[in-house]
Amino acid sequence: MIKLLKLYSHPEIFLPIQFESGLNLIVGEKSEGSNKTNGVGKSICIEFLNYCLLKKYSDSRVSLIPKNLIASNVIVLLDFEFNGVKTTISRGLSTPEKISISRFGREIHFESLEAASEYLSNIYFEKYPAHTERISFRNLLAPIIRDERSEFKDIIKTYDTDSLIPRDFKPHLFYLGFGLELYFEISKIILELQQKTKYLTEITKLLTQDRQIKVSDAKARLNELESEVSKINASLEQLRNNDSFELVQNELISLDAQLKEIREQQNAIKFNIKQIDILPQPENINEFEMSILFNQFKDGLGDMVKKSLEEVKQFRDKIDNFRNTIVHDNLVKLRTELQVLNEKARKLDENYSQKLSLLDNGELLGNLKSAIKIFNEKNIELSTLRTLIDQYNQADKAKKQLTTKKSSKISEFDLAITTHEMVLNSFEQTILDIHEKIIGNRQAHFEITTKSNSQSKEFLTFDLRTDDDHSWSTERIKVFIYDTSLMFNEFTRTYHPLFLVHDNLFNVDNDSLEKSLNFMYHQELNRADEFQYILTINRDMVEAMEEKRVLNFNVKNHIRARFTKADRFLKVTKYNEVSKRKY
Image (tube, rainbow, N blue to C red; front, top):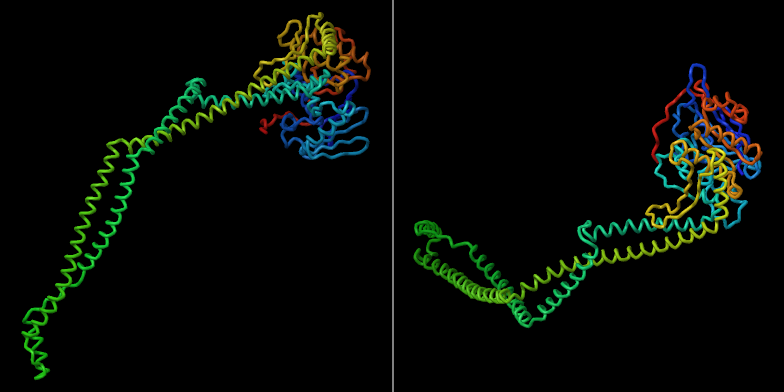
C-alpha cells in the first residue's frame, strides 16, 4: 500500500497539503469579486503530486510553467508511507532527472528518472513472489492518477488524449492478478508481425510494380524469364562452338597481325623519306661570282695556282653529281618499298573486310553480339525478380508463422481468461454493486476478450457496459466505477497501491455526483485506513447538495486544500503555460 501524507516545497511556493485516509477533496472556490472556480490551480496541484511520483518531466504540465515565475532552486517533496515505511521523494524543478529518496532515515540520490523508478518498483514488488513479472513504478500508477486531459472517455486510456500512445493493458492486468509473461510475449510477436507486414508490403509493391500486376503474374514472369535466359544461353554456346565462326575468327586474327606489322614498316619508311626531304640543297653559285673569287685567289697565289676556272667548275659539278646520285637512288628505293607495302596493306585490308563481311552476312558475329546483349539484360532482370520473389516468399512465410504463433498464444490467453474466471466474476460483481449504488440498477457488464484478427498492437478488449452507455456524463461515471472497483475488489486490492486520484472527473449531473460522493464516504466509514481517494472539484458543484443536506458527510471536514482566483495554488499571479515542448 502507498499512503500519501504531505505534498510541500522548499523554498515554499505553495502551501503544504496534508492527505488523510479516505476521501480527500481539493476544491476550487469563489472569491470576493470573482465567481469563477476554474483556473485556480487544482489541476496543477495534481501535476506537482504526479511530478513527485516520477512522472516524466516532458509529459508534465510542470514543465510548462514559465521559468521566470519560480526560483531555480525549488525542490518539490512528497511524504508517503510505502509498505508501512515512511518515505520521502525530493525532486528539483530545474533538475528533473536528479531525484532523492529518503527511507529508513537514509537518503539515496539518483541521477535518472529510470533509476529512481526501478528502486521504487523493487520495493513495491518485494512482497510478491520472485518470479512475478514486473512493470515499472510509473506504469503501476498510470491507471490510478487520471488528469482532466484524459477526458475520461476510456477506462484503459488514462493520459492526455492528444498523445498518440496506444492503450497499455499491463497495469490493469496486473491489478486483476494476471501473469504478464504471456502478455509480453504476445506483444512482442505482434510487434514483429507488424514489422514483417510492413516489410512484406514494401516488397510486394516492388514486385507488383506498385500494384499494377499481381504477385502470381510476377511469379509467372520469373518462369518465363528463366526459360528465355536458358534458350539464349544455349544459342550463345552454339554460336561460340560454330566451326565456320572459329575458322574465320582465326583468319581475322592472323590478318590483323600482318596488317599491324606492315603498318610498322610503312611508318619506318615514311620517316626515312621525311629525313631525306629535309636535307639542305647544294648552294648554286653563278660563273661571274666564281670568276671574281678565283681572280682574287690567283693574284695572291701567283704561279702556285695553275688550274684554270674551268677546271674548278668541272670539279664542283662532279661533287654535286655524286651527292645527288646517292640521295636520289636512296629516295627512289624507299619510295618503291613503300609502294610495295601499301599494295600489300591494301590487299590485306580488303581480305580482312571480306572475312568480316562473311561473318556479318552469315549472321554469326551479329547474332553473337546481339545474343550477349540480350542475355545480359535478361539475366539482370531475372536476378532482380528472383531476389524479390525469394524475399517475398521468405517474408510471407515468416508472416504466416508469426500469425499462427500469435493466434496460438492468444488462444493461450483465452484459456488464461477462462481459468481466471473466479476473479473476473468477483470483479464484475463489485462493478455491479457500485453501479447499483450510483445509477440505481445492475444493468452493467464487464468482460475481457481477445482479438486474434486485429491488425493493431491491441489484442485485448476490456468491455465495460453500463446503463445508458456512450453519453458524455455516463462515460465519466463508468471510469469512476471501474477505477473504484479495482481499488475495492477483494482480489484486485491485493495488487493495488490503494490510492486513487481523479482530477475534475465529476463534471456530471448532481444526482450521480451526490451518490458517488456518498459512496466514497461510506467506504471510508467501513474501511478506515485502507484507501485514499483524492478528488479535485469545484465547490459550487456541491453547494446545492449541502443546502439540501443530501450528502452524508460534512464537505469541509474532507477539504485538504482550497484555491480561489485571489489565492491560487502557486503563489504567483495568473500565467500562461509556455508552448508545448517536443522531445
